[in-house]
Image (cartoon, rainbow, N blue to C red; front, side, top):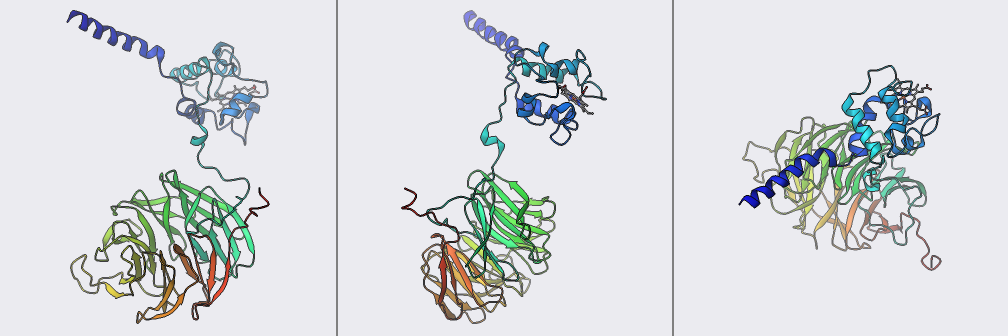
Length: 453
Ligand code: HEC
């Protein structure tokens, strides 16, 4: 017993005594950077670089200033960085302000004593934009595609890039390189000036990219959550974007500022697609929890489930002229719902159901309305894309030359062509009236397999 308590005492003793000494290494990222950010970066950043010194990056600290190196690893007493903080070396820093608190000077000193190491790992620098466009042997699976509102461009999601094609598919106009491996949703603002892309890199980050189509520059990248974002409906006034996430959230961002307006967690599983109502005041979001949820798009307040829960939902589209939404998913049936319950009936009944369409051969991944709302197209794990009359539910045409795994369908704004893409990465443009295939191409340049070996 004595022995044991002795031992315990010793352990405690060693722990308490050695704590301040062995004090965990000072971290450049967590300890040093914030001090510099607060007290030095105003004058010592790339744009100002007073004294020839940029302190905002580790490399800049190591590069030193106009009089050479500012620190010697392991020797704080020989480091001007420390000397200028204590007043041993003139002029004292931060220039023209109170000296740093002693505790902060002590941390900087300890960091130099410990070797002035950097602990920012490559992976912590965050996702990077590729320098060169990717090269492809096969076209990458296409999850997102859209036409510009005037019908000039067909914009397609690639791997870490967005491809802007002429809408006939005969020419690549631009390749817009970004951080996300996958683009899951693409939209234009109604004025046609801005592309809003939603995506991310699975299990790493979600991203919203804002692009100026005229200058082909990315005006903003909003990194959010630790997994891909989905949907990405743009509000009718072009000011907001609503995205769903693998974290079960629905988020609304302001496009001009990148500011997150709200994040809500009404869903119980992944949120896979989003649409705005006609007046922009409400959104409907769907996902694996089977619900089509109506939410106030200004406050994030939950309004109600507009559907009777049946099976997982993967796609939603809004009728171009009415507050009707078309949803589809695992149970293979496209359902047309009204966003507003006709009578004050109880929640989660099916009084909002306008029409059920024909059951598909396999689960549904993508839906589209024709520009006037008169027709719908349905795609998914089936090897066909049927087109139906919205009013009657009658099948009008079938697009047959498609492969299983249709992830994206879009009518041209004039309604005279329809584009289908998905797992095989090919872009197929059809005449939606006759079902005739007009063109079939890879949206990315392919490297010649033989030549590459
Ligand atoms: C208000 C502006 C300002 C602030 C804030 C400031 N500095 Fe300076 N710093 C200067 C100027 C100006 C010089 C050049 C002085 C000279 O040439 O005599 C300088 C020079 C230095 C140098 C010497 C560079 C060389 O090679 O001669 C070091 C080291 C330094 N600053 C560290 C810091 C640190 C650390 C902080 C924050 C705690 C800080 N400074 C905050 C303006 C500032």
